[in-house]
Image (cartoon, rainbow, N blue to C red; front, side, top):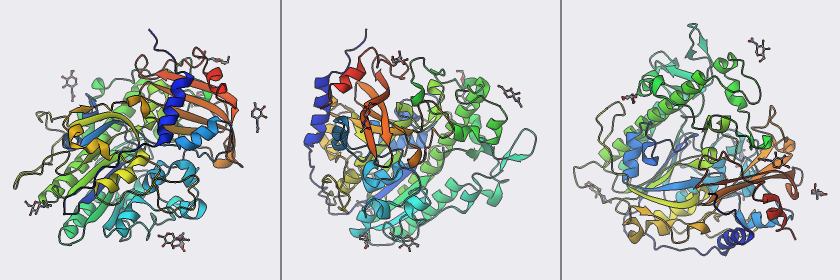
Length: 565
Ligand SMILES: *[C@@H]1O[C@H](CO)[C@@H](O)[C@H](O)[C@H]1NC(C)=O
Ligand SMILES: *[C@@H]1O[C@H](CO)[C@@H](O)[C@H](O)[C@H]1NC(C)=O
Ligand SMILES: *[C@@H]1O[C@H](CO)[C@@H](O)[C@H](O)[C@H]1NC(C)=O
Ligand SMILES: *[C@@H]1O[C@H](CO)[C@@H](O)[C@H](O)[C@H]1NC(C)=O
Ligand SMILES: *[C@@H]1O[C@H](CO)[C@@H](O)[C@H](O)[C@H]1NC(C)=O
Ligand SMILES: *[C@@H]1O[C@H](CO)[C@@H](O)[C@H](O)[C@H]1NC(C)=O
Ligand SMILES: *[C@@H]1O[C@H](CO)[C@@H](O)[C@H](O)[C@H]1NC(C)=O
């Protein structure tokens, strides 16, 4: 039986509750010692992790972190502002953004429309407003702030400097071997080197004899050792490159995932009811040499099933490789006796489709691409302080077949957005939480658009293993994706601003995901909600994989039009 479709009342309830912005302000940590922050950002990691219930993926170190953390089961990236969304729904002028790199959004605590970062081609301080970032705020509050690996998106979007000197106390560190990531370093079946998608390597054979994420871990550990000798608190951000493509990882990790054990996505077909505008043709995958050789038809493919298994194998192997890096880093933190004074936040910038709906990569509004892992370890709060001589984060070897299962830790089902990282981290560290942003906020340097999630860390909530908020229906996550055309074409995945013709606005609640694809004029950033190109509606309970589009059956169009003035 089908649950009732969302009705107008519910829609208003949802928007109204967000706008009311009734927010709990938790007391700052009363501990006298200032807490350090270790922020770990993994590139393109969906929650395919043991701690998120994945039975295949080996991630013992991240699972161990989860066991001492509060884990958010329903965290989503790529948010757009609810306030502006009301304006948009009512058909008025608004500056909506597109696939803005999610990193600038969560690192500034502003939704993409405020950063006005529509592609990778501008620096927000010049283009939108001189917005403070999370590390900048910590730096201004006496912290030593450091960046290792991919934290800001490189290039113009962070002024070719990872936003230095504003965000960081020292110039950010980039691993020297990063420059080989997209070069021909993958040994093919012909014995030659190629720029492949699947790139398990013998680390001793690759240029410099190392990989970027290994170098980042080593650098981060060196910095922790230096910090140990300083009397100042630190904020260290470590950005891992994998499992972003190409899947270039130490080849032994393949052994964890024998091909015969790899299944296809549970729903590997393009669903009948999927509007063509919603489909992303995964062009970046097709451009790799090994995929080109498969001569896959554009735009729908499919990829031969054997190769689908290999992609999934390499994605999971890359996740386990990153897990070992996280394990080494946290074990070092423990050895330096910093685990009792350091908050650890772990997240990712996006999800990644692994063949679900016949799709690969990101570039869509489905849960598989917008949902991200998110967890916070707070010493003395989410876990008791480690006893002297005991380790909270001993390194766990994913190859160890008898590795003991870990306690799942505390979890919350509440729907949250990545833009809440800024207020939540500052609150957990006992700093003053930046004020909520006014509308518009282009001229306000320090404010936040996300929610402060501190209420989740109150002791009476943490006592419950699984916390379900009293009114889960009040939480909503917003995302959006631009398209250049109604049908998939060469630039559907990443249209530049001037090519955007259609915008897909998406709402995820605990019950459903609802997306409308509407006309968009890039010159004016104008979405026309009278010009509906297609709609999607998926119910979480009856269709968790989002394969049965109920938009037409629920009269979604009339439902939306009924909101027009
Ligand atoms: C932007 O903010 C930074 C950091 O607060 C400040 O140093 C700089 O002067 C500001 N730039 C402008 C143009 O206001
Ligand atoms: C961006 O970097 C350039 C070159 O280093 C520098 O001259 C410029 O001031 C930077 N922009 C801002 C807004 O800081
Ligand atoms: C592969 O699957 C078989 C059968 O379920 C299982 O016994 C084996 O442990 C699996 N191998 C790995 C490496 O997970
Ligand atoms: C929904 O209706 C539109 C317009 O009539 C049609 O083009 C589309 O194929 C329908 N979608 C589904 C899933 O039935
Ligand atoms: C690629 O596929 C197309 C049609 O699917 C076919 O016409 C063409 O010959 C193929 N090319 C190669 C090199 O196999
Ligand atoms: C952390 O543990 C170490 C070693 O037991 C101890 O010296 C230090 O004072 C502790 N720090 C805090 C903030 O409890
Ligand atoms: C919005 O779309 C509707 C329907 O296509 C059209 O009639 C109207 O002119 C459009 N409005 C603007 C401002 O472009």
